[in-house]
Image (cartoon, rainbow, N blue to C red; front, side):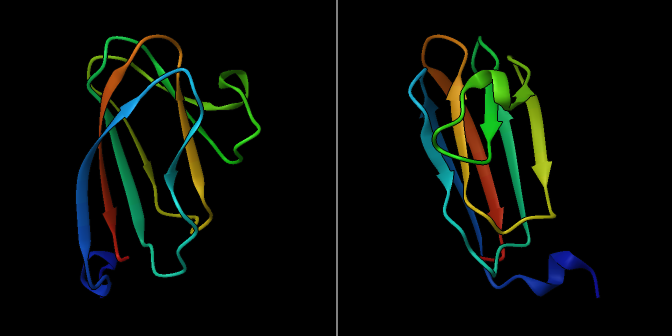
Length: 94
C-alpha cells in the first residue's frame, strides 16, 4: 500500500512567514508527509527547533521553491530570510 493511501486526512493551508521563527507543524505521530512551497520573494528556512536561526536551517528557494519531508513526525519551524513570504503547506496523514 502506498503512503498516500495510509493517511486519513490531508490539510492544505497558506502561512505568512516572516523573519520571526514560527511553528510550521506540531509533532504528530500520524503525519506521513509535509510539503512546503515558497511563493514569496525571499528564501525561507525549515528548522528542527524553535531556538535555531536561518543559518541552521534547510533553505527553500524563493519564487516557487519546494521542500518535502516524509521521514519525521517531529515538530518543524520556519523563518524567512527577509520580509513577509507567502508559503503554502500540505500535511498528509494528520
